[in-house]
Length: 439
Length: 56
Image 1 (cartoon, rainbow over the protein chains, first blue to last red):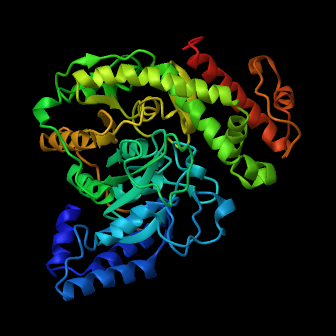
Image 2 (image 1 turned 45 degrees about the vertical axis):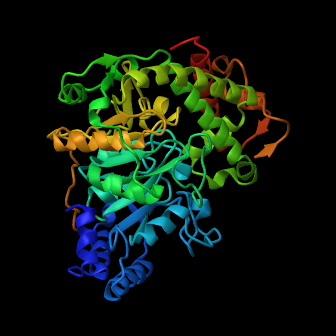
Image 3 (image 1 turned 90 degrees about the vertical axis):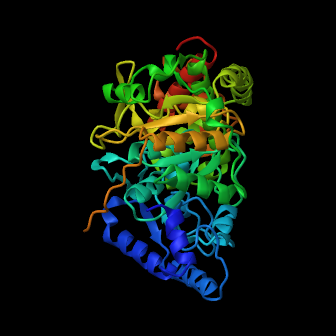
């Protein structure tokens, strides 16, 4: 059932928000082995839900997400709790004084926050392998990664623990776990959704966005976060194309077949993708490294080694490299603008194939095994590098989930959401929800 | 970690061993950090080369 129908049931009094919250809490408590949730916020959730029910009882409209349960990546400020950003060193930090702006907007729309979710430490990774809170399992195959860095949020939605979840995406951290867990995710146009109260990583590239089980749910949540529905052009104006070249290499046979299943679409190429990916990699290392430089000088061993060593190296990059990477962005953006002028939507894989096995945490790139933690972003980094809006949509395949990126021009968030909904109507993409395991 | 001087990113990290890379950075690091930092410096050097079109 869509979250809009859940909300309608609450708004007209057929269902109590408190009951929806209790059910979500029960599902979370019944499946600790998923390692998607870091904190279950039972008292807060029940209080918020009771508030929604009280509004209904008074004849007031609680909003379009009335009683819908959700979770947030553990880098959104939640009033009264430390914002850990997935770091053990922040587990006992000073509690946040108030909620992140995104949470404020969702609460005003009637949504009920029930949990915080696991992530890679400081969002620096693509697998959600967390030294303190464990590796989030992929609900479709618990021997596989959920993807990251917002893996807990994606797994919680895919497993049906909550109605939706929030994450953040710097280089692919919403799109990758959405694709690997078989749900929808959106990385909006850079800077278009509120970042207040979100723990930063790379200010040039950071954005927040939602995970959902349908394209309609995703659009509804996005509209609440944005303050209005994103405008969309007619579908007939979009003239979609598939990105080839860099984006057609290193794919598994299932991914190649999945892309072909989208229909006879033109294939286009863009020059300089390898440089774009490297530029994104360097901007990330530089900005992340400089953000953490003081803390790393003071207490390097308080970091997860897999994060720490990357941040220290990045912090040593000179300013000139950062400037060089940013300068290349303008060049690549112009090439992409010309392509998006001709094709309103570009389609690319999220990753090369299905989620990697935890026992073999590598991906094959040009025949060589590379660490999944750093390399699952091969196809996502060149896109977010430009701040473009992207919906990650799960292909309607029978096996393990495979995701595709539906990419639009800057500000065309409505186009990518509408295109995802159209593919869903045609049966070409669909979410892959699974029942939570009972333990 | 004690920062002794401003970090200097080595231009030839692929040719240096782990200790030499960290010395070139001008950082004094806990021993546990040295191999990982050196590996990441080499990786970043590769990305710099790719950005400049020197390799794919």
